[in-house]
Amino acid sequence: MKRCKECGIPDIIGRDQVWSSDGTIPIPGDPTFRMGIIEVPVIRAIAAKLEAIVGPAIHTMFMEGKRKNARHYIDTLLKGPLGFLVRHSNSGGKKAYQTLLQTSTALGYGHVILEVYERKTRVGGTIHNPYYTPLFVGDVRGVFESIERLPSKGSWEDKGESAKILVERMDGEDKLAKRFVFEEKARLPGNMKYSPCKTCGLPKELMRFKWNIEKGTITDTKANERVFIAGLNDINAVFMELEEAIGDPVPSAIIEVNHDYGLELVRKGVVTGYGDLVRGAGLKGLGFTSFSGNRERVKLTFNNPFNKHYILGRSLGVFEGLEGTKGEATVKEQPGALEITITGRGG
Amino acid sequence: MSEAQPPKIETNKLGQEILDLLTPIVGAIVALAMLDKQCTGIGVTPSTIRDDHIEVLAQRIEYVLVIFGHDGKAVGTRIRALKGRTL
Image (cartoon, rainbow over all chains, first blue to last red; front, side, top):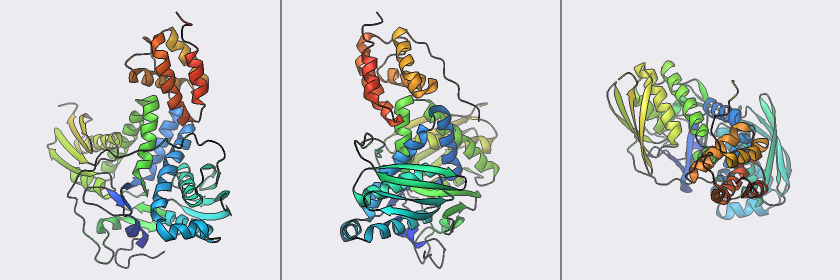
């Protein structure tokens, strides 16, 4: 896989994603499709917390959310003659899977080996170092559905550091065909500024992330943790559906995990002030942020926030870490915008 | 990880019957949270459900149960059957 000679980031990252001044990372073929950099420990912790409430069904939900958006993502990549070739030539299908699964290594999903492929029937293999297996199975289902133009079902077997996965054609009714679809209400401007790499144009700030293409991992060297790049609508779709079903336990889980994570960012020295939170959120595609206030009262304004609860939890954790006291938040929300004012509980 | 505990909510007889239907399907925690959330969505509580709320509650529960991999319609039919039984 080719990398930029100057910044070392895989070329494919700049080809398939755009770091925008509005704090989002859209894909070139569809500006409404948002990517983001998500911390692996955070998504796993949220999944674990939700599993304690709803049981293993949560993993199927994450798979479903990813499936829809992965299919859309691949549809966008396979537009025009390329798509025709992939979908109609004898060898095009398998080659396309291999290429697209290689792409997934650059997104930090793990190292994938394709072992089984029968056109319009099934595709399977092994993923080593999976970021979160249900999401990856959702990815493969999306690829299958885009290439084969058929609904799919997926299964997996976790084996510690690897997992066996299988995606097959689904017969019968696809009861979730219209579910797990999240659409952003509005996109607002921002003036996020990056230092572009002179060779590839990607933000040099991304150099804090190290790609291990052999393992299929991305490490945030500043926080010393694994991250992955994925469609944010996929994850929002799961949160939205589940919150519609059972209400408060969902935002509570998202807030708690992100609160703890925000606190940890301060403890690790990754965030030493609100400016770090602002820059980090933008670089990860979580939204364009500004802040004002003082130690007793901090106002954070987000344009294009990824998810209200995710951002709120993280902001509360950072506040607590920086100010040494638990914070209480008031939240104002408008389409595309979120304003969080945090005051110390003591003050 | 500590096991999540079901929240405590008050129910009337209809609310309890719906809970009794849902609990074996999705477990006590989800059943309670689901009933509470779906009641809130129509402006009632699990302790103020009346016969005339049953149809819309059944529709809502049918809809959300599908994401858990369950046959929402079958459950909806059983909820509708509660109408008039608990007066």
